[in-house]
Length: 409
Image (cartoon, rainbow, N blue to C red; front, top):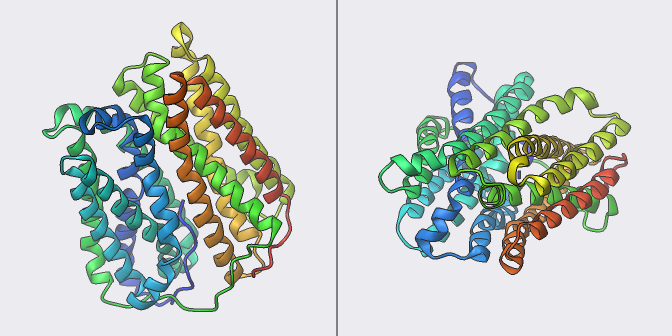
């Protein structure tokens, strides 16, 4: 899924001489926000073989971070209000490193426990990092935010592509290949130590209640959940699907996951220019939202035909289409939580609703795909399921992108 949610209002105090240190800390943090999760899919078969997990249990493993996202996101503003935003980020990075270390230990229990810790830590960074960027860089906040979002996706793609080669070459196999991505978090934590001495960025400002009774808010929420569900289902199972159905080798299948995310990065950079810088053109936004979902559907259709001799041609095209659609959908889903809100406090409330419910919905994706594969013994029903979810994304996104304002509470 998936992207960061807006954070509570922040104190804008910042020393210019600390700008380089803050930027380095933000970018290193971004490297740790997706890579620990994207590296699992390419080695999921080895993980299952080494721990005795079946298809359904493997799906639960890949869904666990999303459940942690949903559970932890609501508590982050209150915790940051007590600790301060930067100290909370430092603590989250230390928890991320600890979670990666626990996941390295043998057995399924440490694997699940470490993954849950990773999910909680990344949820904290998802919620708080945008506020730190806005407070620390002011007029250049948009540039800094784009930089860390792109770097987050690039690091995630690199983790996916390198997982199998690292597992084959490093002692400890897949466990060591996964724990490697705790290093950026550790480096970032060292940089946040001096930055966290100031309580700059503690949560403050008015709050609005979540708009649970608003149909428009639910359209935004379902769109967020559906696009995350499609992305995380493919993130978990695409390498395995390509190995078993399309005949790709393990390394090549892992690099296809990198191609998926690289396509998403490119689309996420192009979408703002296509719909307009202000995002105020509802007609363009609506068309882009529908187009993103149709790209995903087209990619799934090509994956259905990507067998035998046709796989060499169809797989890369399908992966690019699905990745581009997913990257565009992520940007549009995040934009909708801001554009459909009446004010800043309403944007926080709508984003909290969309993120918590959306991640909860997304967590079902890898489990359902794994269960459908286990029940049918084929990858056709799981692909049809992903395609149907993309159509749900299309319907919800069409409504969410049509304009209007959500009244908080």
